[in-house]
Length: 190
Figure 1 (cartoon, one colour):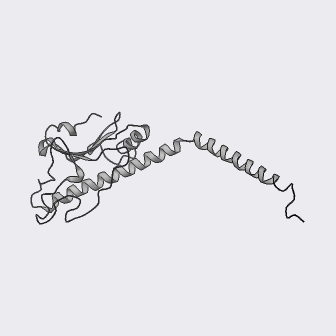
Figure 2 (cartoon, one colour):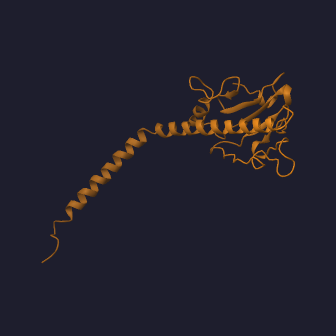
Figure 3 (cartoon, one colour):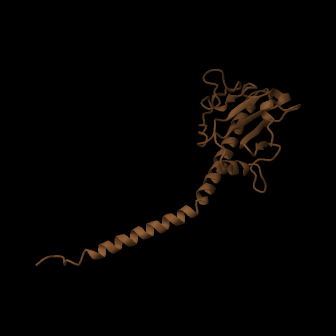
């Protein structure tokens, strides 16, 4: 006596057909609501860039406060230096004076994909000191995510702390504001 009847295989075919049909419907729904992925990317950019900027500025403040001279900041140039390679003149001279792996180690997170590394521009007290990050591709998610950092009502940075170029997504944050005219690389157009 056979274990299965010859008609037993028909139910499996119907079940597989229903599963494929449900998969196609789910795919169509996901494709029509693709903006949900974009919103997630915007949120991620806002959070990552905002927290990295806070960390960088706190390391600059730490460097400044360790010494007796309140005018000492990490040394930089007017043409720009990668934030990851900066040194702190106020760190003890024995050992590394690197801002990130010197005596007060903390890891500088990698920038989100689609961005160049943070850059530091030092124009001294008169031209100011700033950090800048630039997207490598200014797509909608990047531009909206960056704009959230400076645009009310939930801006993370005030207009006195930061400048943002809407068309390119470039974000500049002051480390020290200038006492005179802002240095060229810190004076970006809105």
